Length: 437
Image (tube, rainbow, N blue to C red; front, side, top):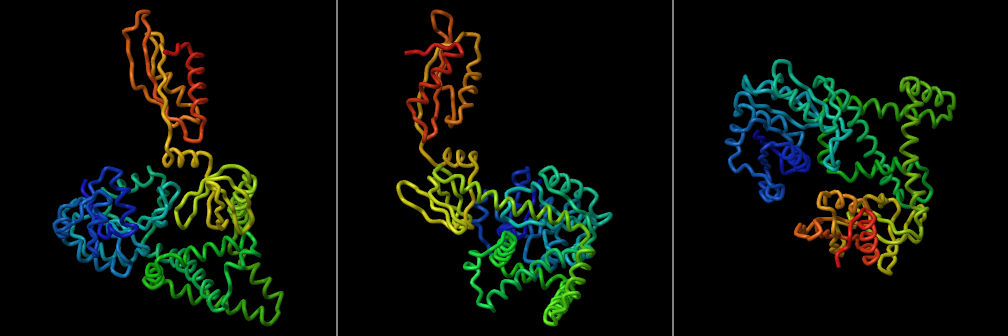
């Protein structure tokens, strides 16, 4: 099926271009920037004639800035063919769905959609996708899209557009507003965030990281989330009012009033024990990684730098709450602990397989004629020091009715090549093979 993604050269557009392409859709993209090179990099066509692409597509996806989404829908919907689907991927739902209902011709189905994640996530596994189908206008395509997302691990929530905007005004509107306000409070106080990490608790560290995560995103996107949802201002007013009330209680040194406010909020929250358990898991995950890093002193490990994307492989020499020192090729590299992630053994091997040169050795053996050479190949491959094994030659014209097979083994760079070859030869002999000279 042919799909047009309007806004397909943006970050979310690129994510969904890859997703739908991987699942058999013929994707065409269009973006107002006209960046045809982005389409080329993704291996898809850029719609040089947008109107024609709209008319001929089975699915049209709108993923443009929130403030222009409804306008783009109104321009696009009337040009679509009967039997096709128009869907948006926007953080608000009421206005985009209203625009689709008003302007999509009869026979064109519509589906409001809000992926609750950003383009940095690798897969849909465990992610929430909100959908707002319209009765009588989503009969064919809603099940198709729902099944596609669910089959790839997403959890689908169905909600009316107005209810969506009400919940999102808190889930995103309040959360982002609070974090951005905390960031600006740091600025107004001229507070040294980096220095404060020397005295941080796990809870403070996690909070600061989330503030930094939000501040490091596209400010225009977050401005639109705040300003395009009509219900956000009411949330702001309530939040600011509660801040003022609590601040006044502190100013008045009224301990009973403070405790009452906190107790009332906890009673409304209801399930604080579960929240404590979930947050403990998050805190313990951070602590356990740090403890594993300490236990790795003197051991070769891989560290992935979250900002530069560089992988550092070497022997860890020293670990503190602030820094980790790793020795690479005789040189010490100083990295901030907060900026790196420790590779698992599997990830480290995968990095080595992909990035390091690996020696190859050919081993020729005689095996019984009725034996399956591919079984021996799989057995050799089980050794973690082996990158890959392949059969490069077979010959059956042996006088004693045996089969000659040559295996080419690629050995992980760090392994002792000679010892590895000897070990594989011993393994094959133990399985009844005879080494050919």
